[in-house]
Amino acid sequence: MLRNNLRLLFVGYSDSEAEQLRAELSKINVKINCKAITDANDIRIAFYECEWHVLICNYTADSGNLKEALEVWKQVGRDIPFIIYADETSDENVISAIHYGVHDYIYKGHIGRLLLVIDRELNNLEVKRAKLQAESKIYRLTYYDNLTGLPKRNLFCEKVTGILSNLSDRDRLAGVYLVKISGLSDINNIYGYHVGDMLIQQLSYRMSVYTNSQCLLSRIESNKFAFFNCDVNNLEGIRKFADKIMHMVSIPVVINNLEFYVTLNIGVCEYPTHGESISLLLSNIENMLSDSQNKWQNSCRYFLSRVDEVSAKRLMTREALRKAIINNELELLYQPIINLDTGVIKGAGVVLRWHHPEAGPLTPSKFFPFIHESGLILEIGKWMLKHVCLQAKLWHEMGYDGLTITLAVAVNGYDQTHFIKYVQNLLTETKLPPQLLELELPESFLQSAEFSMNNLKELGDAGIQFSISNYGTGGASLRWLSILPVNSIKLDPALTMNPKSCTENARVVAAINAMAKNLGLAMVAEGITTKEQLKFLYEIQCKFAQGNYFSQPVNAENFLKLLEQRKTGTLD
Image (cartoon, rainbow, N blue to C red; front, side, top):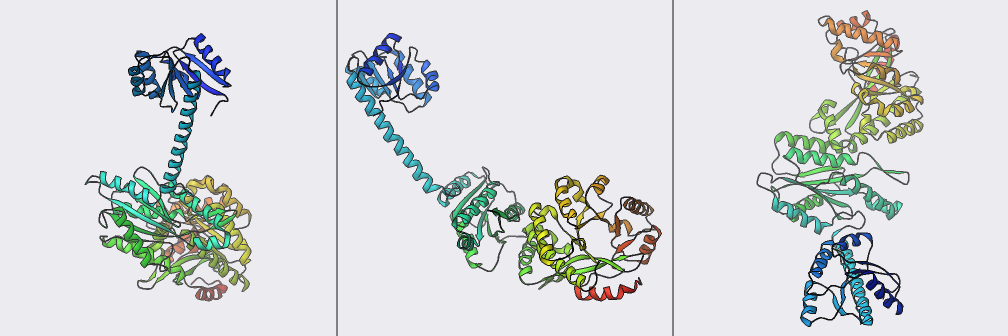
């Protein structure tokens, strides 16, 4: 029984009546805090002033005030016992009062019975609240994942079924995605289950960003999540959402200063083509995942029965690209950058080739868009950086001390802090002098350079060089060229394509070259294929050039032969 600091609200009592009731309760060792109000409408205000344990009312069953008090009490919605302590009345009035909702009717003068009723109602209330808490806990354990707070499979299916029943014929399109996290058991075994749990929590938080009333997320198993997304208009929308999920893991998960690069396998079904119930759709995807076990990593499979030829080709290309690294189908080619004053090779521009098992050699324009879509930009970028540094170090040890290798990087595709650490660690690992590595950024990057200036400066201070590619057509601010740690600019090939027939471009190239010299930057003319272009470069005193006129991109073995040939400084 709660007899210490019992908070009682007296309704319909005068101050003197309330004081008399308080005194009577105090005589039987009940310590109370109380407030007396005479107007039933003041109940609402009193309820918001304090958390009362019991409301004791002086109104009788035939009083209109009792009905008013009960209405206000019910409207407030507080779970507080309502007890009448009033003058004697007929049994019909008592029954009527209980019918209205009061918990009990005690005649004045029976203070002991009032106390027993208060005890009973408070105990009942405590049992009721404990039951509700237990039911709420059971509900959460049954329907919500304890680790992530996401709906479990049963609640997810229940909610999706409700959404599907309300979809109109016009909107009857949705994507169902089963996301499987690979390697979780290895992380648990090596680092402990607490690390694996934190990984799951971080990934669930990232995925939750994409949820709304039309897009639901569930953790259906320990390493499996499911999305239902009816906020799509066509098959392309279904595909783009899968790309969002895949891109989510391009940035590593950091736990206790450890970086974890997560591998996802995603299965996708389309509603209603592949099933009109969520259970059937999930079953189709799970069967597809099971059939593909250990055959594909960090990729997305579509259970689509109607995909146009172009979409099918895109999907096949993306999936094949994921296997390219494992199967050693990627190769780095090198194109010489020539010093026009001496004729010797100043550096090498790196070009990526994909030796597709069926389509043959593919240039970057054929597959680079799929690198971004598939979330492989980080993995392939690191692979290129490592091989470039190893090759540059090898040529350096062979006596080509000043040979700089230029590699284009999509810095915006990385978490820049981790990108910096990776480059620094790679230079330490390969022992490559940092000034021999030049990272090439697109001119469009200058539009957002403020975001990355400090990061670039940190690498620049370490000795790494930077160049801006395709310069001259993007309208980049000249201010950034003097602020950023840029060593050279590479002209957009379109500007030097026909220098004689396009005098306007010729003037632009000459102006950029003069500007570069004033800023202390080297200008490299790319895409040189004719003697006419070369002559124009001599006329404006451009110092460096690159293009098929000198050599097509070649593998490392043939590039070494070019280095030997160019020792004489011969251009033709």
